[in-house]
Image 1 (cartoon, rainbow, N blue to C red):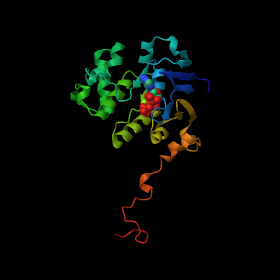
Image 2: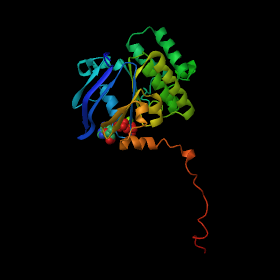
Image 3: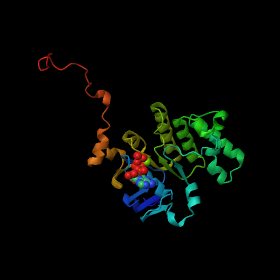
Image 4: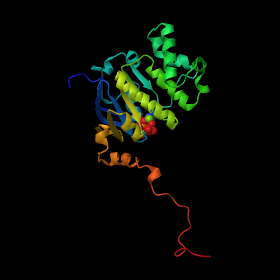
Length: 265
Ligand SMILES: Nc1ncnc2c1ncn2[C@@H]1O[C@H](COP(=O)(O)OP(=O)(O)OP(=O)(O)O)[C@@H](O)[C@H]1O
Ligand SMILES: [Mg+2]
């Protein structure tokens, strides 16, 4: 394998307010690969994405984007080449849906007709059709709709790398499964590269080319989904145990205690 990875993170450490949040993280995202960052709440997933996007400066370590040190690149141009789906949407509240989705195309000076066509295409692809929808403001959308607009905004200018922070978390299970499948199709057809955050082990197994498991800001392991199923670190086992299907577990019976041992009044 000689191709330069689209993203390389080398020995990255970061402390916030004096507390270590990322500890010597090293990982790569190859061209066309979806690396899933899996970890409990507070394990450092969002912080790692923000560091890659240049929103947080690491204390030590290095990030290479398309083979070049990210710290040496113009941060604004760098960000436009990373489609960032922010946890909880992060839409501009005073901009319409159309204006939010067209943000990067406008900055890149696309002709308005091309931006409009791309917006319409993305709204339809994400199950948000209709011109009326594009004219709404974020406050007029449900949580899951806002999340989908956030995904559309990240995809709009077709960036080489996607940074996705729990992009499907606020969706109902049917829409979520639909978008997960669309995302898989996207991976097969256009070979999108992504760093994709989730705390849902099923989603990690379904979407990841590889799974990077974070624990307390450190990289516990990095494996393919198939290898992850056989992983035996305590943290991997904790996630795998959540795969038990609750409907197969022993039913909880709401029955009185056995009369032999039960006390009678
Ligand atoms: N601005 C901040 N000030 C202080 N502590 C912070 C700040 N941002 C993050 N942290 C701390 O850093 C740790 C990692 O936070 P981060 O948001 O990266 O976690 P996460 O893995 O994305 O969690 P979640 O799954 O809940 O989104 C947490 O302990 C968090 O409290
Ligand atoms: Mg987070």
